Length: 356
Image 1 (cartoon, one colour):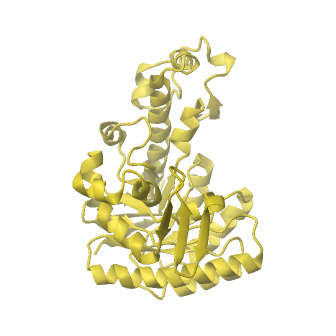
Image 2 (cartoon, rainbow, N blue to C red):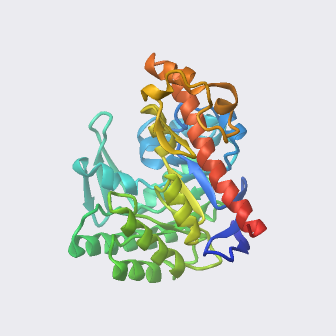
Image 3 (tube, rainbow, N blue to C red):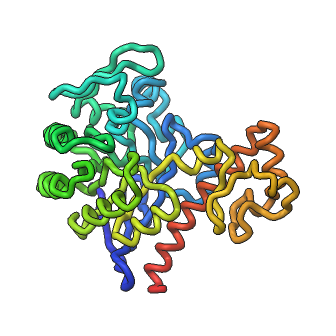
């Protein structure tokens, strides 16, 4: 069983610095986790991720279960061996796909029936099968099957989703305990944008002694102010001695606010997704490399950044690569964007520890 140690509380906000220990190593928090949906962080090798300083990545249970499948991954030695990534991996449950693939799924009290987005075949996820799948993958932190309620949704819909999610979490927790595994199962808070349901979810989920707690159902299209309010409400109500994970949060300003509210862990596809569309982070804000003003710009993507892309290449060159549809352009933007977020969070952690 893992453990979480709080090292410091900020004197200026609710931010905290800690260490989450897993069987595959310790994770300093707060931490940003790049997303490797299908067993890879798009366009980046594991060596690049290690060079960047990534401490943990996230992979997707739904996608990996469909392709290449748990049996094949097991034959290849598990997810870590297949990817050649030897630090911790968190796997989500497929709950986000209940939201994002709403047109090809059907929910019942027993679980979720998906029509595969690959070949149209039927695949049935239950709370127990999702735990079994994550065990087969060999990941280090597991998530229970849940329903990520869309925004906007009525109170009636939100309450129905919440009750079923709680039932599934209880089943997941029982099945996880039977396995007597070193993998950590996080509890998951849902309840949409309704504080009374979030409160109900926190009270229900925290009755189980999960190693950590995740805040789901945010960053699903709601206004920024509403997301910040829900994150703050949940974070301050969750146990102090357990890590808090906000699912799907990754824009720089969102990370800053969520950390100040006492959230410890974050993941998002945004750094590599934006890179594929030619966007990059900088101290000036989010920029589009295709902009004409970068055509002859010999400066790095971000003059203050120490990543490989910024140390060696100019905006003009990377703009040329993107314009020419060269894969290296996306790789360099992805490398920079992941580095930017990972080190932004690491810097905040150091500021918490040093009281600066």
